[in-house]
Length: 105
Image (spheres, helix red, strand yellow):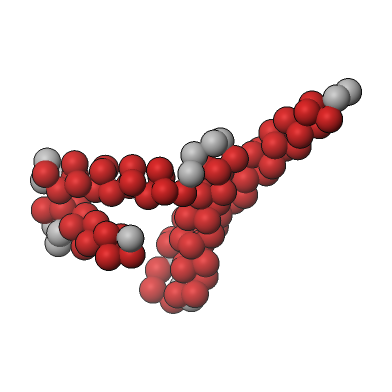
């Protein structure tokens, strides 16, 4: 086998591991959320932040830059705000997130 074949196989392996990790994190989050208010807040934060990290890593492995992902997130938030998405109507959640991310840029 050529060296490039090993790189492709390794990339596929990493992508599959990231997908499996993401499923596990989502499962853990769902389990935590069913436990009610006695759940450790840090465990929920770990799941959410871990999921976000995995999505960024997966995007990178698939050839998308972090900036492209960030720009697309902002674009989707803006569309939701303009179209008055249900989540936006109930507490302006999309606007809050949009402004938060926009400040970081």
